[in-house]
Length: 206
Ligand code: 5GP
Image 1 (cartoon, rainbow, N blue to C red):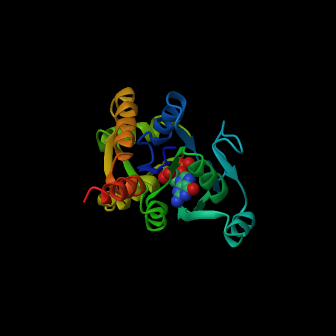
Image 2 (spheres, helix red, strand yellow):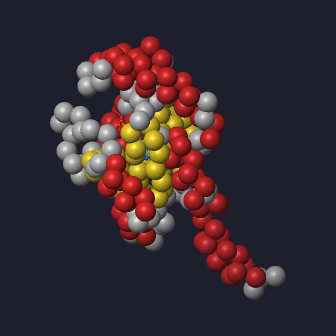
């Protein structure tokens, strides 16, 4: 069985990473999307258990204490975290598990799962990013400004990621991301056991 890869997708608010990961899950059958826990309020149309598991700070703290999260971070005054059970179960089933998380969480994942694949979604330009954030219509100007400041901070950390994907044309972006993940399955680093087995068999040829 092909081993699952843990895939981290980060990017500035408004870069389109949510749409990208939804399309990957809908179009290819090897992906499983992790649903995070958060203390942020649901946006109109968001459903508990679908976009996020919405909870108060006390419940979130409890999750941390139970070791129920593989990482968590504070982003613009709200907590966000990745539930452990789903991720580990899906990986053991051979699925590629996608985490759509911000950069502090991404770095914590890389430290715990060295074979994780870190992707950073970029907008074609900053002008386009601001236009998308305003166009979404779900955020106040204050929140947008805060998220733009946060984008400036996150931009400092892009070199921690293995690939950037530019979300200009969505179809092309979905295809390209899938190709990167497909190729990532074939790195020696992620195929240690297979390579070792071949080497063991070659021992007899010496
Ligand atoms: P939003 O409030 O726009 O849904 O998400 C804000 C930020 O939190 C986004 O950058 C999103 O990727 C990130 N995020 C969502 N879930 C998690 C999580 O479980 N852990 C971490 N570290 N970040 C998350």
